[in-house]
Length: 365
Ligand SMILES: Nc1nc2c(ncn2[C@@H]2O[C@H](COP(=O)(O)OP(=O)(O)OP(=O)(O)O)[C@@H](O)[C@H]2O)c(=O)[nH]1
Ligand SMILES: [Mg+2]
Image (cartoon, rainbow, N blue to C red; front, top):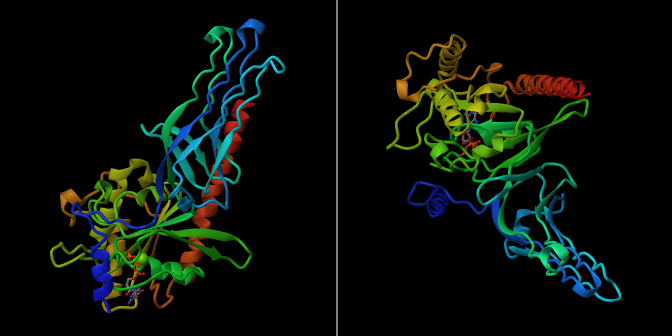
């Protein structure tokens, strides 16, 4: 049974140790604003402006829409005529993209973050119509390649090494049915589930592919998935309380080392991530000796005692966890407490954001 998926998975791994999945979370497209229409020098007529290109967030759009269509051009401005000296504007083009898209130029310059339905960004301006100052000939529209980068928007992001039980947790807390198996990299694309509360409050939780040492350098599934945690309000670390070993060729890492390594990967990818609110779930508490491992790991983290960890595995700034909660995602142990704590931290975070917002507004007013 396990042989087939292993074989399949191997075909997805490149020489550099990078995993490729069919999940499209970034596309590059070419956009060309419309050219301006010609002016009419003898009558002082001005050509119409070229059309503009916008990118707009829409719930109906998907990344697959860009599989075949990669070039977009807006309409040309109308030439000035004797009957209509002011040429009309060329038609605009609006490219619909899914919510959570970050639009950048090829050089990485940000053109807009489109998180809400209907939000839009201008990505290519049409050229000016022909007039006196440009010798009556219409100007070319702006043309360039842009990148559409999908960043998931979820309240909580699950971070952990492969096989820690992240997908099992998503399944336990929400109605999602993620794939679960006892080999690493079962999850190859992010998946979002909704945690429901009795008072109808909903919190979204993103299950991400497992990280490994060197993820920030694009090892394993790479950092393309790390960016999905950038916009979450809470990081939920999921660690097998017994530790982790990727394969016989890799070193065994204790739960404490695993926490530190995850901390280090986030730090190396983006230092700000380590100051986000975080909760640590120590999983697989239903198994032998779990209690002993859990007590030790929790004590070391609470005391910030990392002396037993080799220097090179230590993060510069150790995350201060809001909570350390022993759970068994498989058996459902500790789920209520975890759900409750997630909510408290998210509510606190949102409250703080609101206050900050109000202060800023008051400052401007
Ligand atoms: N005994 C025990 N096994 C668990 C528990 N949680 C998960 N597992 C098992 O651990 C294995 C991995 O679980 P997954 O949920 O697929 O782990 P994951 O972190 O999503 O793994 P990747 O997607 O590969 O990163 C499966 O065989 C699960 O049944 C637990 O609380 N107790
Ligand atoms: Mg998984």
